[in-house]
Length: 435
Image (cartoon, rainbow, N blue to C red):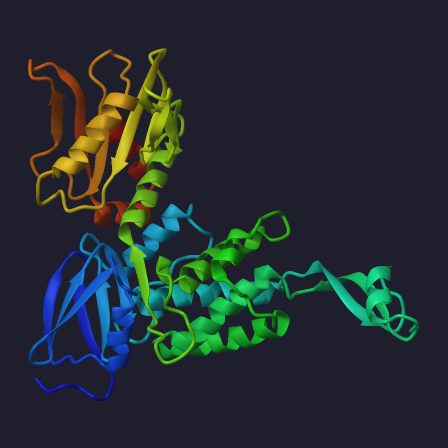
């Protein structure tokens, strides 16, 4: 197959897959980007003889646009990129605006990145319709008349003996605040990089309007996101900020947004983190009314103990810890969430060791039987690769802990969550996990 020169070659594979594509020759700019380690741990590319490219995907889904190729990694356990969007939405607590459908984009099967661009645009347009937020911002300037407070130190240093310029500090009620700068930056990025013509046109219009309100550059994206606080005046911005942050950080991939010709327009979502957040949200919802607590990523420093120094040796942090009282007795169940293909293979020894340790150190059953750790993984109901229930035993055969694999059928769960039986999904998962 001849090498295409009219644009990037479209390549597609599923997560965790490795494929060799013919007719792809990377440019020197592409090679420099790869040599810099931009995709380490996320996507591995290797050039082969005869204009062939080997692409090995990990647990990241999304798109990477190079000069020679546009690589699209699609989810294995889901129906498509729209399901990824549904998982993001549910993990965030089901945001108010409805999610797009496959018909929302005119350019064929929608890319995950364009779907996120569409969400950024729709939330930005909603804010513009209702009027963007204004706030009081402290400003220092040299004025002809006193406004606010006169700054004597600055006046003496810069305008000694002058009365025509007065150094003042005052409050300005304006829209050029962080809430609007974040939306403006995300809309500007969508306007430049969205593939769908309709989304790009809408993003340009909204970006132009937001730029009038918030012309100051956003600066460091992650610092801006970390500095946000919500209250009754800006709570309605929360959903817009979440989608804007997802787009501006490339789905969590850093270091690809420097100016110049090497901007790769990469958007890769870590399905490990998304699956963990999605399962945790389901468990939190499912625990409602049970009297049990669901805690995320709790640290336990007393489990590993250095007997020489009499101090903790390190922290133990399960993905989820379910705790409370059952039948009036203390109950604890650690939950390990793994986005792995355990519907097709056995549980790995490393994951079994970790889960068994969690059970032994943190688990406690109200009936006095050996403690359990639940290991939740994607897969159809009843699957588990032969590792549905694994006991950790002493050499004498005494069971000290158990690991129970719990598959979650993502396609079926997401389909149910969008229908009238949405409350049953978290309740059913919680029952299966808590036993």
